[in-house]
Image (cartoon, rainbow, N blue to C red):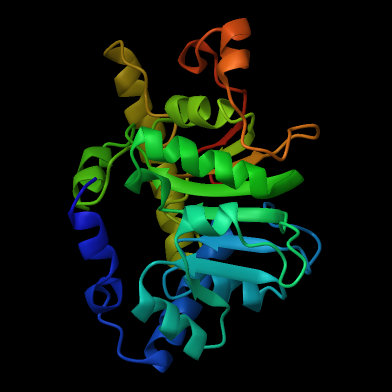
Length: 283
């Protein structure tokens, strides 16, 4: 395992230079405007839907969910300082190991595993090796209710800045394309519903103009790629967002894929599931 993983994870609050609860709350409130754009149309309709944010940090996304009126959002993280900061601003943050939590964590006093209507993995999956990611996603799917949603954001290797983003964090193990992320989720019987190109986020007038200019420039650059005989990126931003769903009938137990592989061939040979691509055209 990367020895810097734990060392860096335990120092996130210091790395972000948080100045106290008021500073953190102000940063989260600013970030909420971006999350509104990134997740539009993806959040559950019911405000009492159980939601789990894995790797919640000091609660950026939990704060956003709280402003939207969601009442059963829980976050877990390994950084005790960030978890404490999140708690001090009124968020349900807990210091937990992700696999221990997902494989245990029954309702208090009942021993019945909680099924989540939404699980969130924002900038998380890339910090695991493929073997670790397989175990994580199996546990995630096991705790999703049928029809439950998974929202992810991961580094985008197709972006012109994809290599920079991957190497900008010493704990990154993976980077993805829409195809490879689709393959990974498909191997866990998750149906990808959409990919989203998040940046620039038109949260105000200047950024709306910026996104319009970026859209035109990306289309012109795509023409240049095609003239060179190359395929233009499906998503241009260095990070891509994706929405997946657990279909009805998917067993709530850790799935052994050997039987499926014997019948269908290795997961790596399967085609990724079709998904709606929301690229840079202002959507």
